[in-house]
Image (cartoon, rainbow, N blue to C red; front, side):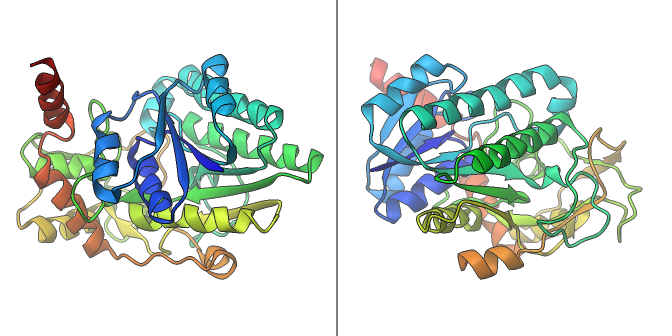
Amino acid sequence: MSVLVTGGAGYIGSHTVIELLEEGKEVVIVDNFSNSNPIVLDRIREITNEDFKFYKVDTTNSDELEVVFKENNIDSIIHFAAYKAVGESVAKPLEYYTNNIGNTLNILNLMRKYNVKNFVFSSSATVYGDPHSCPIFENFPLSATNPYGATKLMIEDMLRDICKDNDSLNIAILRYFNPIGAHISGLIGEEPNGIPNNLMPYITKVAVGKLKELSVFGGDYNTHDGTGVRDYIHVVDLARGHIKALEKLNTNCGLVTYNLGTGNGYSVLDLIKAFSEACGKEIPYKIVDRRPGDIAMCYASTSNANKELGWKAEFGIKEMCEDSWRWQSNNPDGYTTAYIDEVTSVAE
């Protein structure tokens, strides 16, 4: 029996695949490399000394995706594949609705056809909109302030409706806060295509001299230093949360929803300071206008995940920054150089 990981070559997906393989799971990865790189697959094998099946498939293509279900005995799915940038979603809402909702519908229909019962959904703290207070609990009102968050909320609503109709399904909705960090090996990390949308890869690229300075979106929020406050969680802690979620689904739990964060809020300037200490250099930055769709403050209550999953974030902001710096300093051009070298070697 296999775990299907959509978007398994991506940032969170690749770290989760490592944890699955180290738990002895059979893994099938689906990815179209729209926001990832093929070299990640070799890095996963290098780290784990394990192999897996891989399909280069766009999950919005139902026919291609069905081949994966036909050729494998899948009993669980972890669904990461999605467009994920808040700012970009405001500029390209139709693309976000088409991709994120469309590919999830394809997967859910194929789950029904091939009798797959366990599903872990990669949701987001953006479904809380602009929360009235922090920490944020899972029973807070849900809303969205941007199209990216709206796609996550719509999918959550679909999953809740589907579970009401079919009590044999086991679905875990995991609401991520802000993943950063990298695998301790320094072999894999966050490497978005094009200009980064998330904060940490922007900081790391400034630190290695690939970008001149960091733009801090908004310096007039109602926070301790005027910059936005977020709950940053190490990507390995986040990946391990998925292992615990799969264990929970195997108890025939039905629909469950958990926040995955640390429960601590750090501002943008707090993170810049911590990263400067980790890399031993100053990070130049400038305060610019707020970004559409952003909110002032967002950090989690993780008491439900702690109690029901037996999961707790182990890494602090220091380790998150140190691991991010190790990844970026070891790979100043990200995966690009390694991929070019590999292709050149094959061609020769």
